[in-house]
Structures are given as C-alpha cells and as structure tokens.
Image (cartoon, rainbow, N blue to C red):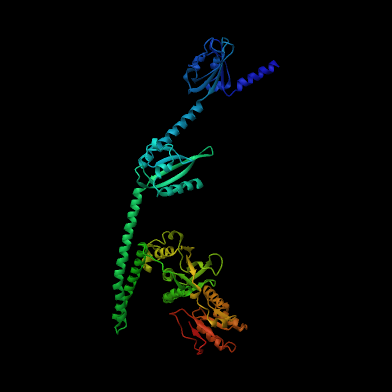
Length: 608
C-alpha cells in the first residue's frame, strides 16, 4: 500500500498543471515536474541550480514566523537560466518540507502570463472605446432601464450644456425634455425603445438654456451576459441640415410657383395662335400656304402640350393640387380616353380597347378629370412606343369590407401594350421628372419626359400607387398599373339599366376577330349584357361554324382581318340562304372605317 501511495503522489507531482520546484535547505533545486520544464527548460539543466537564478525575487519565509505565514503566495517574474526565452509572470505558493523549512521547500508555480496578456488586451480595448466615446462628434449617453444617466460624453456637454457632474444619475427627461412640447415626443420614444429594443427618429430635444435643437436620435439596448442593463442613446445635431432642407423646399416651391405662373401666361397666347391658324385653315389657301399654316398649328400644339405638362408638374410641386370629388361614370370616363386616342391608334393601325370588371359600380365619387389625365398619359405612351398590336385599358376592383355593395372600393387600373417592353436596367428613375428611356427617345418620339412623373404624383396625391411590369421582350409589351380608392356614388346618381337590355338575355352572338385579346373584351361586354358570346379567330373559321349548322342571333365582325376580312365575310354570309337575314355588325376603329358590304343595303348591317 505504501508503494501504491508513493506512485500516486509521484503521478500527481509529475502531471500537475502547475509547475513544481522542490528545493533543499540550501535553496537549490532537487526536483522539477513537467509543467516547470515548460516554463524554465529541460530538467537536467535545472537540477542543482540555485532557485535565485530562476526566481530572483523569491525569499524563504522568516524563521520563527507564524505557522500560517509559512504558506504564502508571491507574484514573481520567472526566467530561464542564462536569460534565454521570454519572462513568465508566476504566482508562487511556498510550502515548507518540515515545520520551519530547514528541510527544504516546495514551490508551486501558477503561470499568469496568459491571464495578464488578456487583462492587458481588455484594458487596451477599454481605453480605446473610452477614447472613441470621448472624441465622438455625436452625443453618446448611456442610461439605465429606468432612464437615469450612467455616462455623458464631452459632445453631450457641448450639445445640451450640462457637465457630467450635473447629468450623472439624473433622469434623461429632466435634462433634455423639459419643454412641454418636447416631452410627449420623448415619452413616445422611450415607449418605442422599451417595446422594440431599438429606435431611430428625427425629433427635438431641449438644451440647458431652454432652446430647442433638432436631433437625429438612435437608441440601442446594452446587454451583458444576456442581461439587459440599459440603453445607449446617440444624439446627432441636425440643426444645420434641417435649416438647409427647409431652405431648399422653399426655393423649390418658389421655382415651381414661378413655372406655374409663366406657363399659364405663355399658354394664353399659344391658344390664340392655335385658334387663328384653325380659322386660316378654313379659308381658301394655296397648297403651299396651307402647308405653312398646318406646320404652325402642329408646332403650336406641340408647344402647348409641353407647357401643359410643365404647368401640371409645377402645380403639384407648388402644393396647389386639389382633388375635386364628384360623382362620375367610370365606363364613360375610360371610354372618353379611348375616344381621344382612337385617331392616333388608327393612324398607326393599332387596336384600342377597354375591359371593366362587371362587378364594379357604374357610378363612383372621385376626381374624374385627374383620373382621365393619368389614363391619357399612360395610353398615349402605350401607343407612342407600340408599332404592332395595340393597347388595352383594364379596370378591376375590390369592395373593401368584402361586400359588393360596399361604399368603399379599391380600383386597379392597367394599361397594357404590345410594344418592345422595358428592360430592367432602364426602369430606374422611370417616374422621375424629365427622364426618358434613352437619348434617342426624345428625338424619335418627342415629349418632355414629364408624363410619367405627373402621373405618379397625381396618383399618389389621390392616395394610390403606380408601378410598371415588363419582361423587356419585344411583342410582350409593358403594363403600367395604378391603384385608387373611390366610393360608390349614392343611389340617386346610379344609372338605371335600359329596358332594352332585357330583350338581349340569352341571345347567341358570334364574335369574329383575329385578335384574341379583343375577342375576350367583346365577350366579357356581351356577357355583362346577358348575351352568350361564341368566339371565332378568322373569317374562314366563322363560315365553317355557320355551315356546320350553328345558330346565332347576330354576328360581330372585325372589319380588318388578314385573309378573309370583315367586308368579304359579310358578303359570304349574305350569299347563303340560311344566313341571309342574320343581323351583322361590322366593327372598326374610328378613322379606319370601310364601306358596308356591297351585297347588303339592309339597315341591320352597321359599321361602328
């Protein structure tokens, strides 16, 4: 058993994490463990050396000292023999081998080098962050969870006028929220930072002299060991920025007011020029004179359009926009836009249509003139950039509250074209003033680049939003969408359905059009009237349906179709005995009207 205990003591001695030196009565080293070798070097070089070479500051306990004084701790610097290697900072525990140490000593060495390095690093970091706070150009204040000040940097003294001695321990409201008009803002900020844990706002605070200062406030939580101890509040003085912003807004408003006034003054003589040229064109003029006058008129109208854009934009910029809320017919409003744009569409050979969801109320309360202006801008752009196909105005609606009879509606307007589309890299700034897709646009298509900017501001002024959707692929086009909120008009303004609509219920109508989109639009309109539409994509397909024995009460025929056009199809229908008396309606865009079918002089065949 004695041998076993001796082996255990030897193992503990050898594998201890702390270094151990065994000294004889002459203070020479007689035994060293592995941990001591890592500190001082090989064991063979250490045994027999005076301990003073390794631990110059170590001294044995005084003789006849109290028993507990013999066991003591000392912090010393340890060195390797010959001064090789770095110094180690050690905590030395001295244990006597006999009662008074005359039999030697055991020195237990705990290496403190790493801990001291960590402490030095932490001290350096602390000093660094303290220097950052002290020299910060913004006021940095730490506060407890009860909003009492813990620290107050020099910039806080400069901004608010209180010294650290005056501020420490005080409630933050007692220092910077003493004004009755400011206190509610400070209380709201404190509630937000407690609820959300952080805050960023532009607000006001009060200086020691009672003056109010504009500040940007940021507040963040301060946690240690997972426990929130308080908050750090950062105040940035933005007095100069606020002053500059207000000056810029005043200058911008003055500029807009000037533009609005000048545009109005210039528009008056421009209208006179256009009117006089119109009178001249009604007179007997030579071809050369008529060409000159027409050029003057076209140039004047182009200039007037530019002035109108600038006038509208300036009114909005100057804050002079006021919505006029009146009852209006939604369908008539949209169709009036298409009527104005129909000639431009026909000149380019484009189709133009509208699609209103059947559940929408017919009469709404809103600013119809501003809505019409936005639609004119968007439809005008669609026709400007589209060479083939056409454009469609669609309106969808959602009754707020879920009931279709609800007074409040959220309307979504869409203007879709089949033009070249807008690539992603060219959509940036699309709704900014004077912005166009590229420099060639103004040379090729003209315009001021204000249309979309005006539309965006009008929509936002009416409480809506506007955006664009496009794949940037030619032929797939672009869709501009915007939302508006409106109220259904009172029952007194609602338009009563016509009695003739009852005669249309269940009637079958054949719709012949090569454009699938417009077949769908006509079909939805016919369904809204109670009719049953049947679609056909070409004249030959329509003839095949009729020859197969399909029965219809009327036929709607697109006048301009490839292959068998509307006029030729009408003639073929009239030639058949079974369909000779079938009512035909020839549909054509205004400005592209053709002659009625030569084989038909009956009033049942009409051109729209």
